[in-house]
Length: 210
Image (tube, rainbow, N blue to C red; front, top):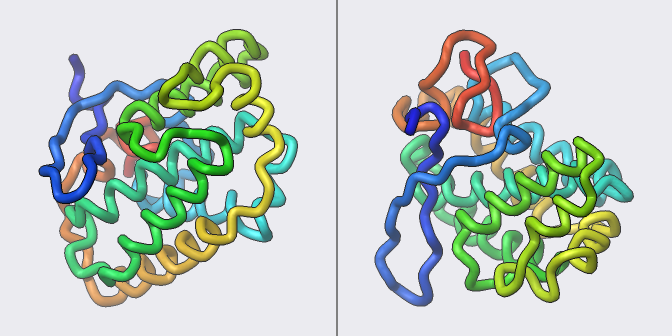
């Protein structure tokens, strides 16, 4: 399998279980970003912050966009926990991101203990299929036990996502931290999201390459 089609994701275990990295191929809807300004990871952070801003007004009534924003939030939370890109990131942000992720999952009925890889894959597929006007396919991508009750009910919840204040606050804080790290040269410059691909190419980072 082409490594450019992979993202390293960490299944979230209960308690202090060790985190295991597992390559997962994500659907194109998750990989695509309209931004061409910078690295994929930075683009994903800023796009996700914008999606949740103003009490998530941009997501209301737009289930495809909500699914994509939630998938990106899950993936960014993994990157924050992983600290490969941001070894100097404030440790309080990890807690804020995980708290917000739990709030996000509760809002749509995603299981709290579901592996992040499963949630990212499912929500990315939902976004892709809704953009293709395939509601039945989108509903089929939301099976229990990852989502309860799943299917059309969960899909309706994506269309009715209200304000998610923890996600809005966590992403705003992460944007500020990334900008601070830009000034302080605090990026590690390694990892799968931001170093693959020719300029403008879609890569494995929920955004575009350099």
